Length: 333
Image: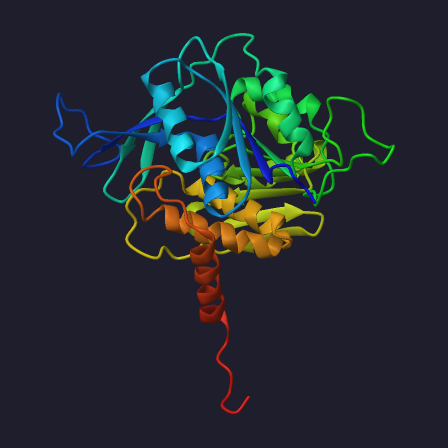
């Protein structure tokens, strides 16, 4: 029996300050009167950790965080939700984002990464956790790239720890090869910051937003040059494309179950749904629709990670959509 975590999330917490604006892009004006500006839990690692936790997976999140009001807000939120965490001090403060959200739910993010040269996540904060984990998700915070040497990518999610077999790998690697994922977000295929993450993970998520006509080329490059066994490129309402050894496949988006309020966090919810599917023993093709349902649900809630979908709703909505997509059967069959 595996007594470790299903998912360990490396880095990526922070606070989002959201302002709902009358239009995007926002035309210049000296002042806009807007609805209440709200601070909420934010950033990608938070979304994946909270999304997986809401789906019943055993989650641990480790990160560097400031000793400031934002850091205390983040720590209190995860404690309230019951998510296992490990924190080390970021003297420069907690990461923040200013989110401008338009009437149609689209957003523009102004991200303050609070990065410090030479910053590292202490190995004692994460090493035991990743050595017992089934899966590790690495956020693209700069210091997270230095965790990869401690992760030995394997062929898939683990079903249990491999101990006492006489064949344990060298100290500092993940026994049994826990699978590793990352989300490159709006990578343009050129920015060097993303390359370590793109080429060091088993499962790579990214958005097509900045790729343009190079989308398929970049996906092929990730699969050819790195460790990835699969690349998943999301395209918002157009769904997503998947590339693996079987070639390209397209999957539709799931229709939102209500009015679109705020698209913040939809990508992280999508990742959480896919990971839930894979760690539940489903194939990638069967897990992608679960991610689509989770992402669509996120668009109907204000805030980035305020209301992640739970397991019963995820599976129930997925069943509904499968039934709706089935061809009608002739009477008597």
